[in-house]
View 1: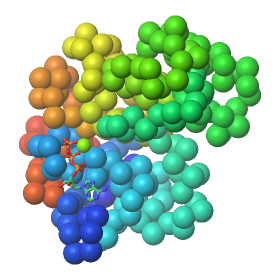
View 2: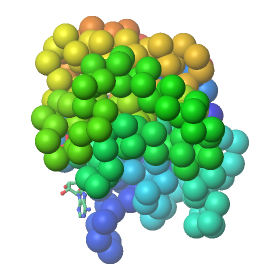
View 3: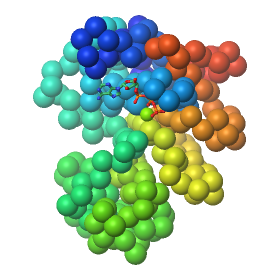
Amino acid sequence: MIKLERVAMGYLPGQEILKNVTLELRPGSFHFLSGASGAGKSTLLSLLSLQHRASRGLIRMFGEDVTWIPRDELPRLRRRIGIVLQDFRLLEHLTVAENVALPLKVAGEDAQEIDDKVEELLEWVGLTDYHDALPAILSGGQKQRVAIARAVITKPDLLLADEPTGNLDSELALRFMYLFEALNQTGTTVLIATHDEHLISLFNYPVLRLKNGQIMQEENSLAMAVG
Ligand SMILES: Nc1ncnc2c1ncn2[C@@H]1O[C@H](COP(=O)(O)OP(=O)(O)OP(=O)(O)O)[C@@H](O)[C@H]1O
Ligand SMILES: [Mg+2]
């Protein structure tokens, strides 16, 4: 269970981008996070991925209160989270394959197994030919696919994806949505931030709408979200 209670957060002293966010994501649930540009979707994902701390409120994840969890315990929790960042954050000095392999390498997985999984995923995302390429030569959509492959390769407990289809054509966007659904069906809790209302309308998942620093939950999704 992921639970935020009355969470506030800003980047500058006294500033509140998130004012009063309360939400629950049941294990194995699938939600969209929507809201206008600047509403704070990426900011909320930065809290959930433990990159930033709340200035107020409570955050529980994986059965623990993580609001003020010591810094040296963060890596253990972060390893359970896959994140696709809006600006990809690929490591420019590593090849495509090395970028995708990174989370498994950090987790200390066997080298042969890493290679096999990387090959399989690169094929799935259509980037086999770019195995040894550096990110600098990739298009925006190709970078996005690398970022997605890197986020899902560990089959994380929680997948956070920030506009993961923003640089993809509609056919590829759907293909990746199906990938997230497949992961969800194996137990991963999924949260997809997007302002693509058309994409949202194609799927029957509850939508958390961020506005004025709060979550406006759609009535029809409340029961599903809170369970
Ligand atoms: N590192 C930062 N330092 C200061 N302010 C920031 C920082 N990152 C974001 N902000 C501010 O926080 C607010 C919310 O930004 P955020 O990126 O979370 O919005 P968003 O909903 O993800 O928007 P978009 O749909 O454009 O990606 C904006 O006003 C932005 O200027
Ligand atoms: Mg954003």
